[in-house]
Length: 149
Image 1: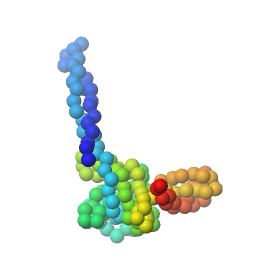
Image 2: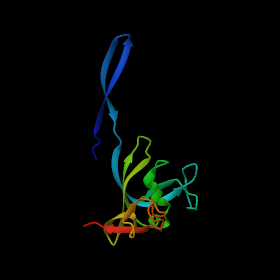
Image 3: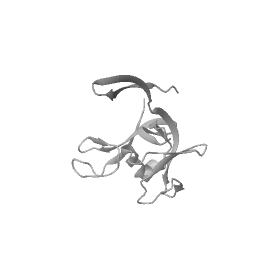
Image 4: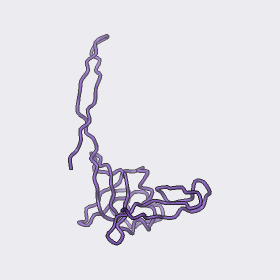
């Protein structure tokens, strides 16, 4: 996978009234597609049994490699749902220089087909990416897996 470059323009002030512009390359986070199942992490980053208060998650790939998601990743809230953790997933994520992942998109693999995963309220036609009540009517959102064409 090719990693794109991002150019940054830096303004350096060396003396009053004298500024120097400098063009420098900055690292852009790589975008990766990874396949595996979500596991929960303990405070030290080790894999643990998922409990009610688990808030750190990682993707465990087939070979056993564990890739943690960034703390506070807003789309990682979906992984609190046990039904999502039970599925084989394909996660598109930004990979930070620290190796942590920030979720862009989550898809499940069902019967060999990729499916978009989200939560849906049929009453209000509202889509969300975390379990919980509908922001409109307060009814529980339904987990939805929509097969891709």
